[in-house]
Image (cartoon, rainbow, N blue to C red; front, side, top):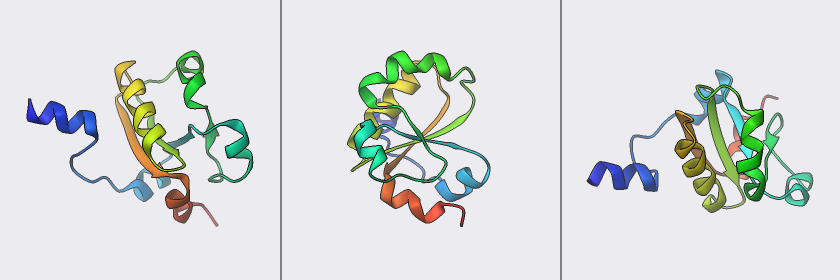
Amino acid sequence: MLQTLKNILGIGPKVDLGELIKEGAVIMDVRSREEYASGHVKGSINVPLNQLSSGLKKLKNKDVVIITCCASGMRSASAKGLLKSEGFKNVHNGGSWLSLRKYEKK
């Protein structure tokens, strides 16, 4: 029961997001198109949270590593939950897109 609650809240062992990105993880920015256009992590894809359910058809490989991000981490947490519920196995909440910029390839 406690582990299930931790999984839902995203509490658990820390992962090295930088290493996952180096290994080819997909960074999925779930902010609106306008927010994304004002700045984003290079190489990220934009799938606004309100379009995520319909956009899942584009993601055929449910084993791909996905790191969700948004402005603060709230929408990306929701996106992580939705992706997990749809069978995506390796999804991580990266929080704010600004915090992921340090991993951008120079």
